[in-house]
Length: 89
Image 1 (spheres, one colour):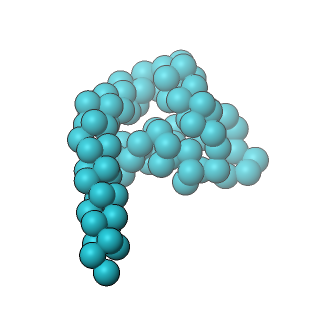
Image 2 (image 1 turned 90 degrees about the horizontal axis):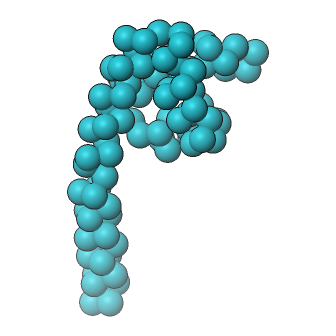
């Protein structure tokens, strides 16, 4: 990753998100950059580099955004289930 151009990074991150259906946060962690950098790469820079790839990655991000309340609810449910089990022991 080091030494790659910004454009190459943007394409690489976009392809990763499309293939893995990962979130901006997950991609940022995988590539060792901030969430802001990932967002800038895939929303601004990618549109100028590869418009069709930008559209494809936008679909994945929109899907993730639509589902985030579900993931948040599941995370909360698991948290409280752990607390209940810990209190029972």
